[in-house]
Length: 596
Image (cartoon, rainbow, N blue to C red; front, top):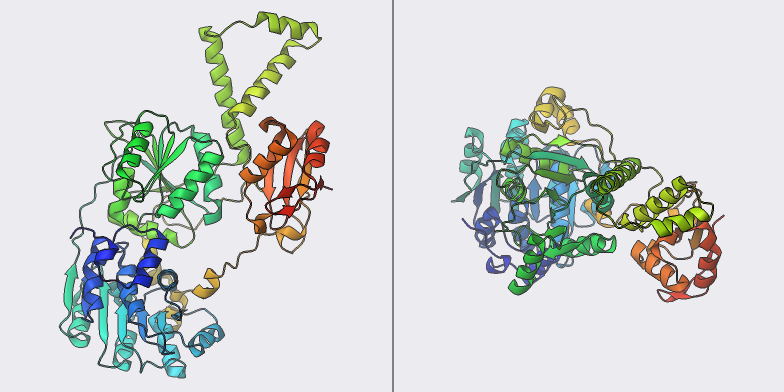
């Protein structure tokens, strides 16, 4: 079945609004098939590969079925692992954002019971949990299933493989017989068929055929980075690899817009391509890309369909694709016509499990790489500058400047000093991200190595193998498999992240930065920060406009919660402070001073 627009699936307006906010342009095949059937109230048995987008296929009808006037469990979703339970809970939270009054609650082994008790007492209507912990709550009497009108089994075959068949049956017997049941599984072994026969009523069988995916013979790597660090890591990789023509895929139109804006502000020639653009605009962007007037094209999967440019050097998966087919389609944009190509994927947090699924489906080896340090980036730039100058000298293809050189020599400057000054000027002009945020620790973006089986990046054993081989048996073993700690999805939505300053234990905005600035630079402190909604490019533009200086006068810009630190060439620091202090910036009077 082909993909369809979400607007044609009978979804309620508040859910369509959430889907649009998330930036999705069309439903996947399993979503296109399952959502209309589930909305009618029929039981469903859906067979599709992991990573095919089935979470939204059952989450959208589940949210639409919730009566917000009723407090208490109305939908229960069973998942094999705590990681999947959290992932489903986050998806439900995003989709339910405009249907006010809907509360979801993940419950799984290893998490504090108190937090789960509070969530249940608060009247959560959608319960997402692992079978072992759900049984625990039933036995304690803290979870009552009398009001359940929809039961969903996600990755049912995995739950049976992990030995949860007894718990699943106990839960299915505890819910009302007059309910809707949806079961999703990659395979339908005998145990699953028995569950279907026993606990569903005339289910609609939906099947998405697993296609044979052929992965192009290109170099594939991935980097584990925090979501907030993706932009910085992308810029480092671009600078280290010296990419001339690249394609960057994002999962939503909103992210395409934001990333294009950030890259352009940092000096990269970038443009965007997504479904909100007219056909004329798309054709104009593609023409510029083919003519190499644009270095990087930022696009969504839908917009990039049919994109045929032979010499794309690298494809960046800035966001992970929703399924294996989309992954293969994306990376197939490079390495065309017999050329070499490279695909680089960013993975954040639990997305590593999704990448494992893509590896299994595509039978591809995606190697993990370390994020290059700032020193490596600068070394690459220096080598590039050296090679460029040497090539120019060997060809002799440059205009002689003997008179100017003689004048400098007569001013008592040595030839090496003159050459060094000229190379310094050239490097400053070619440094495209002058205003980037430099981190205290150049290796901040590098996550510690995971213990892995086999070669680096080889996940063929997968989590299922580890669960069976490493975890103890019985109830205790099941709790261990479900995880040791976690947090409620509502806490995650609340942001809970606090950037620390270089000293002390408080928020970053409460401390002065004592990190040594670059030689020849002076650090200026400004009384605005991230809480004022500013970005490096805003500070850079304002500083240069007020002082009348050029970009070479400004170095690193570091934005904390309530303060911003700007490195300025020593001789211009006092002027910069004088010209900026007391001026109006973003609706407030700016205080500028030399940082202690």
